[in-house]
Amino acid sequence: MYQWILPSLKEVLSENQSPVAECSPAKAEQQWRVSLAATENLLLKTLATSLSDDTQGLVLAAPAPLFSHPQITQRLQTVTFTARPFNPLALMPFMMPSEVVQGINNIENIDTNISHTATFQESILPLLPADPLGAEQFCLIFTDKFRLVLVLAEDENGKKKFLFSFESAVVQRAWESIGARVVLTNPELFAELDVKVQNYPVVAPDYQVIIQFSQLLLQELTIPTESNPVTHTSSFVCSSPLPPKSSSRSDVELLQAFAHEVRTPLTTIRMMTRLLLKRKDLPVNVISRLEVIDHECTEQIDRMELLFKAAELENLSQPSKFASSQLSPMCLDEVLQQSIPRWQLAATRRNLTLNVVLPKQLPTVVSNPAMLDRVLTGVIENFTRSLPPGSCIQVQVIPAGDQLKLQLSPQFDCHDQSYGTTPPIRKSLGQLLMFQPETGAISLNMAATKHLFQAIGGKLIVRQRPQNGEVLTIFLPLEVRGI
Image 1: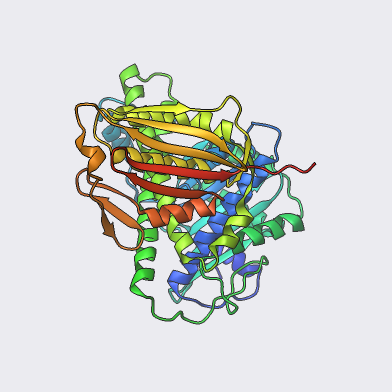
Image 2: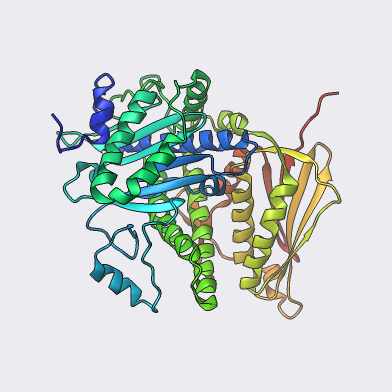
């Protein structure tokens, strides 16, 4: 017996699997988070093997966009579902009451009403107020390689459960449940969305994909224990309650929760900003302001993801194994060509100059393609925040034996010699963060930053030179090719 006229995704998955053991809400939410991280890595690997730059998949998710990696957002279409009532300034559905539309139109006379013919690249659809699906977090993924559904929901007793399935019949049943809801709320959009779903064939799950997902899942688990095994059938098996947490552990989990809570609304704001930027009738000054909003959101989302990843590494019992399992040869030249303009722009906004010296040819390094750019950007951002206006930063990349050395060193304004002899004041904030009172900047401390570089196969060395200030040297291993 369904709770409503249509089954929720929790009910769909529960009908097609064995009963799931109860566990604490925190444990279920942890399973949801690590599964999303594993899914993101699986999507990145899937997209990396594709020879086409066209759209490679469809994601249906709630209550907010779940993936923010550029390769995923650019090549996967995303449809987000949200329950009413909602804030129209944060989540904008396809069909809004006329008074809501009018209220939004009054904001600098920008018409933000999205027509029914809008693209599904980044779309938001409403759920009815009485629909229990509005209380669930879910993600349906359709690609040429696999179909996957993940759900986090409460049962009748208020206990949270996490469930997932690669089975084509289960995913198809989940889509039918969601599709029926689209018929209720936006019938004219159902046919278009249904065609997009049918573009991805209903095939039996490839065991290699499931094994790969299981391996990624094990890598992402923050507390692997013998009593908490992970299977790729349909759900996790929950262990007994964990022992009381230490203060340092609570500090790390607080940082994870904070990063997640900040990242989610920023992702929504960025998504809505990009929807507006697709309009052809916006004034030039409005476009420039929206582009600034998009840039600021992306910068802060990347910062929050870096904080979240640093907190995850602190929870790992064997971070060295995590690092070795995530590394692969990659072209550093491509990363730097994309990153250097952003670094220079960020430095210019702080009245700094960033000079980059590169060799004529950059060798292939071994690192984590999904993390390298973010970690480097985070280090350079923290470095620039500690310098006075008018300073110049030199980033020099030099081959050093079987490694590549990337060195950051400051060159100060000739009229301001004080900084070179007095390092900036930094105060510790818990286990992972530091606070700089002079600028109000909060960033990862050096210990956490070094752990991040270890996770991407590199090494960070920090030296304090009396006349030159702080100098950071980063080493990345080169690819060793067989003879």
